[in-house]
Figure 1 (cartoon, helix red, strand yellow):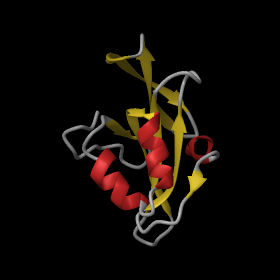
Figure 2: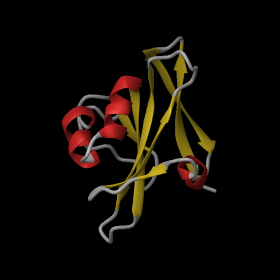
Figure 3: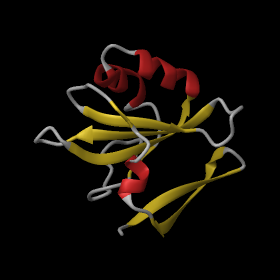
Length: 121
């Protein structure tokens, strides 16, 4: 089992995020993800902490260079309405690049865990 960084929310505010290290299998993260037909996405899932919340954490597993599953990323505080639009989008990859990629804080959960964009944590 690999050690993975997990981000914890305090009081629902992004400013109170803190990171801890815990043993979490990437298989546990990807178990309930929805497989998608896309040229660059393998699967996705949304984690909403309470049913009434309008925001949640979006998990996306991208395809690797061979076309199979690769690294998993989490995008924080994504509106559930935007997630519904992603699910309904004819091109998941295009929707991701246009509305999610540069617009939300994110962390890489697998692989080298290095983030390369300005919105990476």
